[in-house]
Structure formats: structure tokens, C-alpha cells
Length: 109
Image: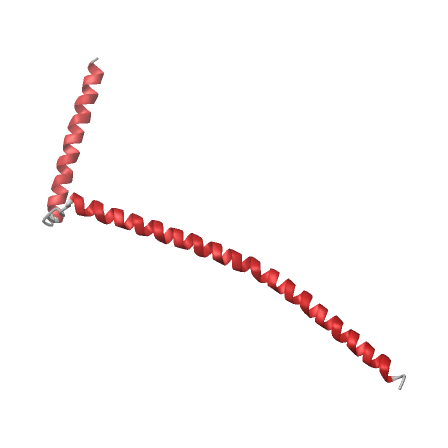
């Protein structure tokens, strides 16, 4: 009978130690989860603020567009490549004449 009593006592001690260790692990786990949860809440707060700001900006843009009464300009008729080349040649000749006369005036002075 004396041999069974210490065994029960040691089992009881092991049980108490396991319960205490479990409690410590639970506290550590709660601390580990608190940090990501706080960061997630902060991220959600920033996302909500951004959503509110974007919504306000879109409302402002809608009001500005409504008050400007902007009508799109009529589309210009398509030009052929020959017309574009002729326009480029006219521009080049006018630039050539402007630089040539400017160059000859500066030589005379």
C-alpha cells in the first residue's frame, strides 16, 4: 500500500505540470496571434480610409465633369499619307527659309 501512494502523487504532479505548461503555451499563442491580428486591423483601417478617399475623389470628378458640360470635339477626317507628306514638306520648306534668312542676316551684321 505504501508503494501506490507515491505513484499517485507523482501522477498528480505530472498532471499539474502539464496543465501549467498548457496554460503557458496558451498565453504564448495568444500573444503570437495578437500581433498579426493588430496588423490586419490596421491594414483594414487603412484600406477603409483609402476607399473613402477614393469615393470622395470620384464624386468630385463626377461633379466637375457635370458642371463643365464638356462636349467631345468632332473627329477630324482621316488624311491620306500623301496629304501628310505634303504638309511635312511645307513645314520643312518654311523652316528652311526661316533659318536660311536668319543665317544670312546674321552674316551681314
